[in-house]
Amino acid sequence: MLSTMQDVPLLISRILAHGSTIHGTSQVTTWTGDGEPHRRSYAEIGARAAQLAHALREDLEVSGDERVATLMWNNAEHVEAYFAIPSMGAVLHTLNLRLPPEQIVWIVDHAADRVVLVNGSLIPLLAPLLPHLKSLEHVVVSGAGDRSALTDAAARAQVRVHEYEDLIAGKPTSYDWPELDERAAAAMCYTSGTTGDPKGVVYSHRSIYLHSMQVNMAQSMGLTDGDTSLVVVPQFHVNAWGLPHATFMTGVNMLMPDRFLQPVPLAEMIESERPTHAAAVPTIWQGLLAELLAKPRDVSALTQVTIGGSACPPSLMEAFDALGMRVCHAWGMTETSPLGTIARPPAHAVGTDEEFAYRLTQGRFPAGVEARLTGPGGERLPWDGESAGELEVRGPWIAGAYYNGTDAEPLRPVDKFSEDGWLKTGDVGTISPDGFLTLTDRAKDVIKSGGEWISSVELENALMSHPDVAEAAVVAVPDEKWGERPLATVVLKEGSTADFDTLRDFLAGEGRIAKWQLPERWTVIESVPKTSVGKFDKKVLRRQYAEGALDITRI
Ligand code: AMP
Image (cartoon, rainbow, N blue to C red; front, side, top):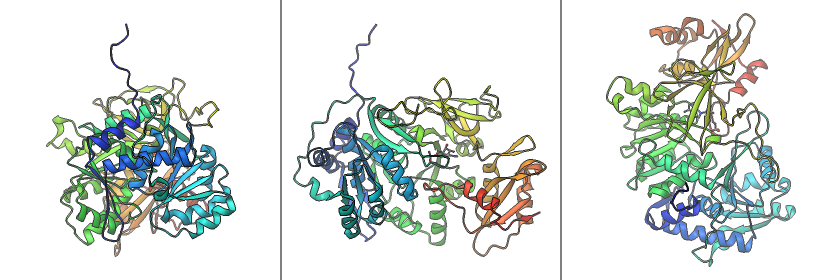
């Protein structure tokens, strides 16, 4: 029997139409750093997205599913691109501006980007790459920044340069958005390529639509039109965790930091713009915390902070809670759109001793994300909160393959996808009977010592709860007797006098860490190396150790 329901495709143009009319007075506020933030209503964003689509189609002749890239910070123009490009049927390709230049070149070439929208402040990054970007024909510049370097480089590379505002000026403020197939490509994002070449994940209109609804659920981020979300997580990092789409569904206002991601401007915008919610990786929040402790500000409006991308250290959660900024921990990947779990404690745990432990987990799987754990021998493991295995997931906003060129079969590497099509996340952890995920490590970071596993994350969290430790990363290093042993690399707080024996005794104290798991190799470093999206870059530490570049003390 067929259903009797209307078959209306789930399209990004529908999210735009909804947000720019029903929530037309909601605002995107962009920080400018000169004291006067820039404000634009959702109605204006809708009109300007239509103008941008006209310009791309009529002036730059973007057609079909051609890729239009962005090399931009989080700001109103980037939101316009988010809606205009997919709504007209083209594919939005957000470029990670923190990647090494040769990777940006590789990615632009792989995606065959014809047009790139760039912020003026990023011209120094783009201009030297132009001669190498073979597919590129047009550069569209928005916002402040010296254009001269671009003009010269573009002339040599035979690329045309346009001013965003000139290009859209005078264009119609509405667009007859095409009725696309909801399964068509809407946006793409490359993984950071820490092993091998970066891999392209291509989101569909349908996957983005469904993911946005999930972000908005009360048990998820659960924001409403009274909220303002400080979107620190970059728009080039998995669609800013889906926030620009989700906010257009509900009328949540967005506060965009543009390039001002340092602790001082973040503290200033929280104080003056009074966002109620914020989202970013732990590294950003560690920096903000130090700033707020050094110079207290009125942060009373900010009551919800979503933290993901790396494990949230318990010490960070406690410190934020104490400032009234309640942390909600979440897990996800580029391949999962990204929201895969979110740690809202179940009703029976709220107000009890169990509540904090639930909040420290990576969170509960929402409807729409199916999960299973696979042991080292390929066996299915139970959801008993104890059996640790590799997490595999499946669902309508989970990748089933990687982009391999428009006419090529998508890539399905066996280490990333199971034979029956589930995504192998490379994350190792346990799942409780009530569906809460606790990650113990990345499969490649777990320390395999004498046939047992030691969680690097557990050691790091324990170290970071010591008052003298600012940051700590633990990596596996080869050991003749045990195969691998943990190496503790520690960043001490200014003025701290703690020595390694003290830190080791601290780890052993109060049953924090089992004796056989305690590191014997220690070193102090100035800061933990970070990846392009602000996560601990442990491969750099492993390499430094192998090259003898670290000053190791054995205790
Ligand atoms: P990316 O695709 O760059 O967002 O990286 C995804 C990876 O980040 C995941 O596979 C995890 O290893 C890690 N990750 C994301 N969120 C968390 C979290 N809450 N706790 C621990 N690891 C996380």
